[in-house]
Length: 274
Image 1: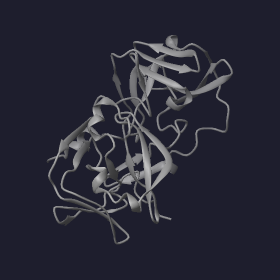
Image 2: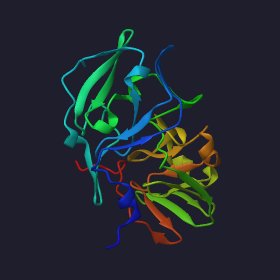
Image 3: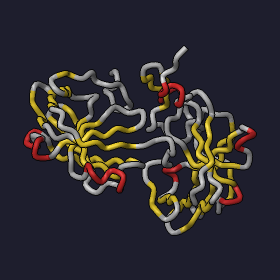
Image 4: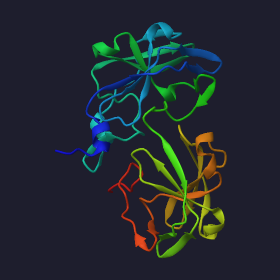
């Protein structure tokens, strides 16, 4: 029996962990709440991005009962990607799929959500809500969006493929000099020179998102399709080559490569059934 490698490495139904050797710090304002050299990355079942788990001894703050109504419904954020059933990365930290105890870290006048997993391999560790703190650092470098996954990577390749992007019968872009960005478990993204994009049909959006591997993205909307394209104006160094290039969501436009229309992939950025 053969197994597709992607499925072999994405055993999402399991509680997974990986120790890391980085110094990890988390801050609330000017206050350091987490400072550890003993962090572990933990993926709860069906989560595709990890959270930091840190020894309770390396947390500066009182561990208290959480406020609020509870964790919410883990099934509410389910998304099926082919044979994989995942929890959408936008689903809050407080939705848990592993056994354990929800707690909070009281840091001054703030309570930061945390979780004590019940698994014996993770005894003494707290998962900490990445979004609950104002800044995280791996060594002395600021991290954004979520902890960086050591098994996740990006590759950027220069290409001479002919790429045409259409939406609603209009050509949004046409180029023979795309950069192809390959990212673990995601569809290839075509980063196109701005001069080969019909920006007259696009309007800058106020939307901003952050990627742990590429940095801060700003967005463009097309008629009838909000936030359909994005640009990295000042990306992280791993993605520096795509600076100011424009990429479109393959999930929401028609992409033709070397004359062959591509299928629209199904990802967390696909249109959701109404």
